[in-house]
Structures are given as structure tokens and as C-alpha cells.
Image 1: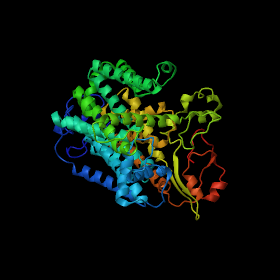
Image 2: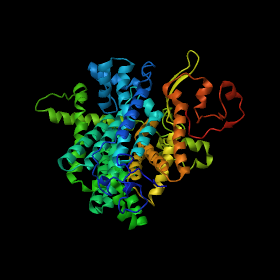
Image 3: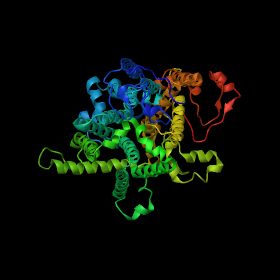
Image 4: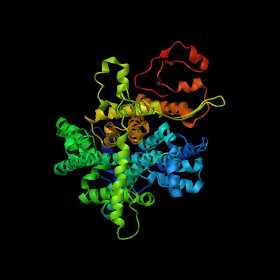
Length: 598
């Protein structure tokens, strides 16, 4: 299915031919703007007023959805017991320790300074940042494609997700991380479309935003993994084999040094998997995957692959100092600097920061000390599920839980490596309950539950585009897939207790993958496929409306609450509309091992 009959007006839904065609990188058809020739990054210089209006409307709706009844539940809700309190500690000069870098708490403190120590003050900054996410996704989609339809579908689908909505309505930090990661991409793409000093400046801003993402939580580093995977892909396509291999070996070497530093000994390295469980492992996987694709599709796919990458192809023109100076060094410097207020208030190992000749040495010592403590905090809690060990009730589902319900799998899924819970995120295996009250009659529950139809269609799109990419590789699907892989796969090597909200970064890319599939359906010559595209959008919106009560904590009867809990530890009634019918219906779906929404 390929888009056909694209609009003639260059200010309308432009879709670069290099990204949309099935395989012929030949002349640009009349449906393309002359300024968007194949492989060219020149902009038309004209604003698309309809796109601007659409994105502005998406942003306004997102803001209203996050501000509506923002302070209805008294704080703290869920992890508000931590982050707003830590933000207040900064304002009060109280020493404390947190396992995450300080930038997210600084931002919450800004809201407290403006609105006071109340629910609005705790939640306003996450709400404002969360309202940006649909807009940022739409902008990234438009930067890559110059296709209005794809951009607005991507931004609109982001409006329908429940996890992003819930996370941005409380004093939590995950939305900051994702926003900074997407702003980093926007500056990256602007830099790729520029040249000279402007390119270096924009890439530096991208590096700053990557540093900001890491400065909220360490998993912001996965955006860096994503950028590395995209770079490796482009280097391979451009024939930069020496650069390709050097970059891959650098990632592997860095992961080995990190593993040795963490273990503080050479001896245990050979006997532990820690050496492989790092971003470097994914660099190795990328190398092997690209080599496999090269063997399977050489010479046609490899020779024609680079022109299909559109804007991403400009990565081949970057210099070494763009990577090290504008990007890597800038991100690291930002990460170091943002620790200074925290270290000034929370001295490490008795080292006090003062503006004197010892400031830089003391900063370096304090920086190393605090990050060792953060690393320790991340590695203490594991997700090894055994008969005699209890774990957090909202840790993502372990595959060992599946093994308990399926005897044939018990021997296969017995090793601790299967305890990583990330496998269940894309299918919504274990969401998180943030708030519950049954006082005064109706139930009021806030569930960090994604839009099920949106999530299941999104992961299906990822799988579809992955298979299709082996035969027909294109820039936008490749970007969405590598963005998803870079932000999702690293979680399989994390042994600590993990939660479904860690999936937010990867989710944004899977939603973009779905938006691409739906957009191509909507412009298909076949009426059936256009109707399928509209039907998918309608299904996502209907599901959103159905689950809004458990995202906002609106009053529900117990029966209507359980209607929305599709995975349960006990048989689930079918055709359950009220308490009486829920109790009396003979049709019940048995529980699915390892999956539970309550």
C-alpha cells in the first residue's frame, strides 16, 4: 500500500518521494514541490498555514486535557511522595538524596515558586511539558516528511494516550525526559537541514537537550542510543565502513570500561553478563543486523538505501567534531553543570563547593561521588522473581509469572534473565494504579493505563514495518523503528524493578509508526483501505473516550470500573454493564498468566 494522488499544492500534504515510493528513486513526480527533490533538504520557505493551525489546535486540546481538574485529588498521589517533596527541599535548603539527577526536581520547584505548595504548584510543570508532547511529535513527523497528513495524524494519536495524560497530571518526572528527548531531535533535524556555523549551533542545542533528558533520569541516555543506531545505519549505507566499524568498536569498548568500573575488578567480568548488558551490546547487534541486511539485499537495497533516507541522509555529511564537540561533549557538560546547585546544597564526602581555586577539583570529586551513589541506587533493587522473594506489586510482569500458569514453559522461563518486565509493556501487561477511593459511594480510580487499542495497533505497526523493511526500506519507517528499538530494547538488560511508565519514550515512536501506516492507508487509491484507516482512527478515539474515567479519576460504579480492567487475576465477565449483570453473566474469560491490570 503506497500513497497515491498526493496533492498538487506544495503547501499541502507533501510527502517526499524518496520516503513514499516502493523502489524507484528516479525523477520527482509532479506531485512534489520543486524544492523537495529527491535527496534534497532545501525547504520551500513557505509556512503551511493549515499545518500550523492543526498543530496549534492539537497543542490547545492537549493543554486543556492536562489542566482540567488538575488539583482535584489531594497530594501526594503515587510518586508525589518523592519528587515535589524533593523540590521543596531545594527551596528550603534541606539536604536529601534521590536516585535520579536533579533537573526534574528543579522544574517542579519552579512551579512551586509560582503557584505555591499545593496541588497546582506540584503539577503545573509536568502538565505544561506534557501538553507539548503531541506538538513535538507532530513537528518531528513534519520535519522528516513535509507531509501534513502524517504529521497531524501522529500528533492527534498522541492526544489519545492515557499513560502520557496521567503522567503529566501529577508531580512526576517522566514526561520531562521524553520532552527533552524530542526537542533534541527537532534541533538535530534542523541542524541536518542547515550548513556551516548554523549547523554546528543547532547540533549543539540538540546535544544540550540530550543532556537535559539524561539529567532528568538516566534512561534519557536511550535517546543517545537511538541516535547512535541511526548514525550507524547511515554510515553503513554511505559506505563509511571504517567509520562504521570504529564507531561500533568504540561503543563496545566504552561498555567494557563501564562494566569494569562498575565491578571494580577484572576477575568477575568474564563470569558476569554485565559486560554485554549495556548500550555497547546494542551497537554490536546493530552491526550484525546491518550486515545481515546487506547480505540479504545486496546490491540493490544497499545501493538505493541512502537516497530513501531523506533528511537522515545528511548524517553522512557530518564531521567528527560534530559528534564529539557539538553533541557528546555538550551533553556531558550540561549533565555536569546541572549537578552544581544540588552538590552545593548536598555536600558529598564532606566536600564543600566554593568559588575558589579548588572549585573544579572539588566539583569533579563531588560529581564522581554522587553518581556512584546514583548508580548504587539503581542497581540495588533487582527483579529476580523467586518463590521466596517478593517484588513491588507494580513492577512490570515477569515472564516467570507466565511460566507459573503454563506448565510447559516452566523449564524454559526459569532463568533470571527472563525476569525483565519490559516484554509486557507494548501489550499493556501491567499498568500502575496511582489513586483509588471508594468513600462516599462511587469508586474513583486513577490508572496509568495506556489506550489499549492505540498500544496494540502501535506495536502491530512496529512489527509490520520491521518485516516490510527487509524488502522495502524507507526513511521514516526506519527512523520510527530505530527510535523504538533504541528506547525499548535497552530495558531488557535492566535488572532493577521496572514499571510501565518507562515505556513512554519508545511508545512515542511506535505511535509514529502507526501514524505512518494509517496515513498511507488514508491516501490509498483503494476506497477499502481508506475506510480501514478511518476505522482505525475511530477505534482509537472510541477507546480513549471509554477509558477517560480511569485516567481522570471520575466516579464509577464497581461494575463499570471492572469493565475497563480487561486483564484480571480471575475470570472476567463478558457483557458486564452493571454490578448485577457482572455477577450473573455465565460468560467469563479466563485470566491470562502474567497479565494483570488491577
